[in-house]
Structure formats: C-alpha cells, structure tokens
Image 1 (cartoon, helix red, strand yellow):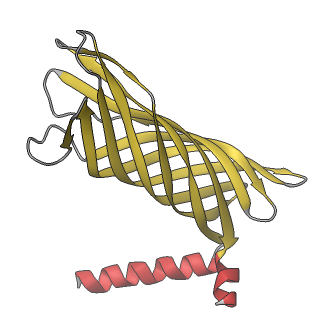
Image 2 (cartoon, rainbow, N blue to C red):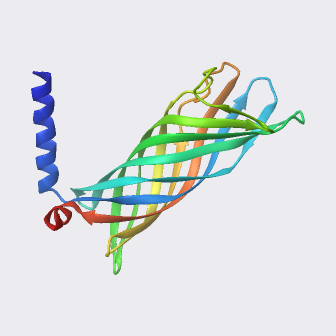
Image 3 (tube, rainbow, N blue to C red):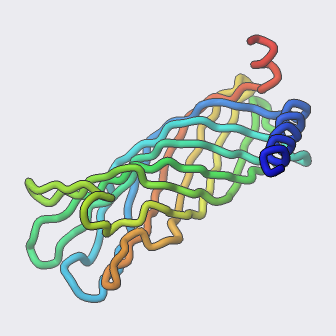
Length: 209
C-alpha cells in the first residue's frame, strides 16, 4: 500500500510539473568559505577564508505572481583556515558536501531579462574532507568522529537572468548547526559565492528529445 501511495504521489508531481512552467539547468561557481569558531578554552581563536567551488543541477517552478521555487542539487567544497593563538601551526579544514538548497525567488522584468532576489534553506551532507596542520593530514569522518556530516543553512541569493537562459547570481549561506562534535568547540559554516548557469524550459527540452 505504501509503494502504491508513493507511486501515486510521484505520478501526480510529474503530471503537475509537466503542465506547469518548469525549467531545468546547470549551475557552477566559486565560494569564499569560512567557519565561525567558538572555543571555551584552547588554541583556536579565529578562522580565515578559504576558496572553494560548487557545481550541479538547478530547477525552477513558476508559482505565479512573479514568484518562483528554485530547488538545486549541488556538490560543494567548503572549509576554513583555523588560526592558533599559541604559535602552533594553523589548521586547514576542507569538507566536501552534497547540498540541497531550495529558494523562493521574486523576479522583476527588465528589457533584457529579469532581476531576482530570494531566500530559503539548504540541507548539506558531508561526504569527505581533510584536516591539515603542517605536514600532518587526517581524513574527516574516519577514525575519531569529531565532525557532524549533516548541516542546515539559511540561504540568500540575488542576480540577473537573461532572455537567452543564462544567469549570474551572488549567494550566501549561514550554517545553523554546530558541525563539530565537541563540548569545548562549536563550529558553524558560512560562505559567499558567485554562480553562473543556464536554464531551459523543461517542455521545450522534452520536445527536442
């Protein structure tokens, strides 16, 4: 019975999307990543930016009245440089995530396309990573499990979409969860990014296929 219900819901969603104005496309860009670090006692007192990147799939559903729902499926590389206050070596942290951002956008018509802005949330799941201090490196999520894989973020975006389907945006994420599983240290992700991408109408893509 559960399989029948899930299949029926999936069929209804596919039917709804096929009748609605739905776009699909690709997105990629660069990140300027950091982590907010709070330490009760210890050597880490601050963090510095690292460059990362993201790439993946994007969809867009027209909700009417210039509002749009924009789900995405991205691979994203994040991290930070954790600085030491005792003269010990700084620690570079890099984490790879699969992310599911969902934003609600409002679009304003322009002579050459649209301007848009919006906000939403993202669920991220860590699939790998590395901590490096000097010549010593260790894998994140293996051995001593100091890092949480799951993260939830607030997301904000703004940009321009051109009539030919290309778009450019600036984006920010603010992590809500403590991703470091320690009583003495709390770490939250944050990032700014720039993206470019391309969207095409789903029904047009189906007709071409």
